[in-house]
Length: 314
Image (cartoon, rainbow, N blue to C red):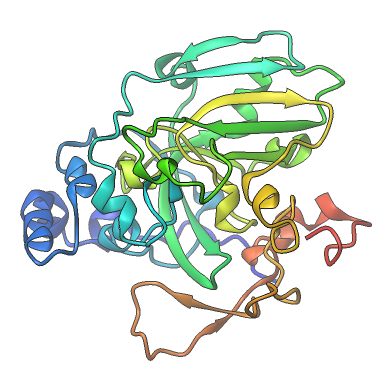
């Protein structure tokens, strides 16, 4: 069981050499020249810097993956199924202006601009582990604010047992949506107690700047104890519901992807083991590491599932 570590993490400028971090335009140009990065990553060269404070309580001791790792190896099927597709094919996506519809069982439904969403919340950096169902992982310095703080603003009522999320539907800008890989638009959901847990984060940036398109601009969910597909990107609707909402991967393959999607090394995916993982950015020949229950966050979240059979409710 992993404990949340105290704030022993170096500053982002110490993790990535300053000359490399500040001269991202040259880095991006060089990578593009060898075909490593497409138009989507170029957006980072002009991304806005964010004002934030590090949250030591929720930051891991581990050093984050590089900016290049995080922005060039992605699952974002709206732009394609290959890991390189989101960086290469997201350049036409326009994350501004943006609004989010708040609907369902709450006292203050409505449509709120991104500025409305962000205005009352102080941004913080949290260094979280991301574990994907394909048995790879990263450590990412997200910038965002607690999901629960936002949800409380809309005053969910006693019928609000779940929170459902929806991704934007723009096939003209998201070429992956032109193909029936999933039942578009992408949808996800959490129990409301999961959504209110202090680890659940709405991310608007990484490495101190606004999210690149391929990482879910302008607003995405990060639930670090669950597999990465729960982290819905480019959110346009948040709905409070009484019944468990449908989720994209559970609709697509219910025998492979459950609603809860908690990281559980003792439950294999039908087509591969989840007992080990490979950290992206290391050598392909490096040894895999053991997958941690709840992705290393068991001490904080295991009580949410007391009495629940996590083999049946995977």
